[in-house]
Amino acid sequence: QEGKIPEAVAMIDRMIAETKSKDPDVYGLKGGIHYNAGQYDQAIEAIKRAIELKTDGAPESNWLQMLMAAYNETGRDAEAVALAEQLQKQSPDDKRTLLNLASLYAQTDMTDKAAALLDDARRRGMLTEQKDYEILYAIYLNMDGKEAEAAKVIQEGLDKGILKADAKTYTFLAQSLYFSDQVDAAIAAYQKAAPLASDGETSLALSQILTNEDRNQEAKAAAQQALSKGLKKPGEAWMVIARSEYYMDNFEAAKVAYREAAKDPATRDQAQKALAQISR
Image 1: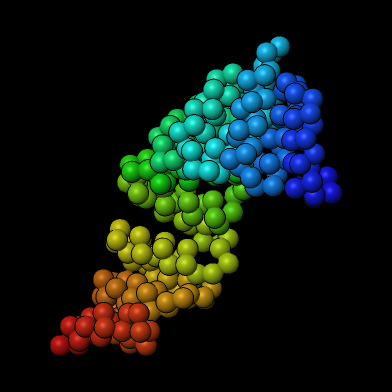
Image 2: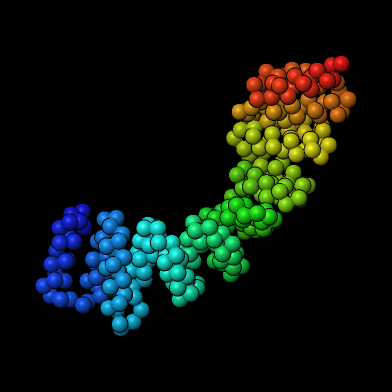
């Protein structure tokens, strides 16, 4: 407790040597000392000995949690996952154990298993906190072709009041919907996100989608809102405004917008080419 790890290790090793102790709690304590000192290989050896000696019932859950974490810290992923699966099977309704297993699956490129485990927990009502839903929809967004599932999770989290109805959540919802070809719903989500955002990047994304859908007046308004809230690359919003004006046959207004876009290094070349074409 005083942080004197070498003295603690020496004392418990002396005790074991002199008493020939086969008390599993002694080895559990030794494992905990090594674990807290970051001596994970020694922790694994001691905890495995404690489990071996524990013949009168199940091993202490904190031993198993430490062993799993020590395996993880030493890159013994297969052993960590196997132990986590064993713990989850023994306690299927224990949320901490389930989240630990899901985290290990995600860390070891078994995202499909992580998603399946968490989605089952969601259906059983075990995901009760914001971070729980965020972990699940983030996993889906990192999987190919799972954007629709991410959108369902986010919408459920919003409906239950577990996820905050803020710019971040609505933006992820909009992205999930857009990349699962639910364009109208994505636009609606972006329209909720944009006023809540601290800058204009969300409004810019909305304006670009509206442009692709030939909703030019709305696209122009969204791009103007983006400019008013601030952008890293304001030229991108001016490009949207220019295209919107052009497709609404407001050619002089389009030229003005392209000239503004040309002031931004990020869109200069693109704007100048477009301006040259419509000025012929």
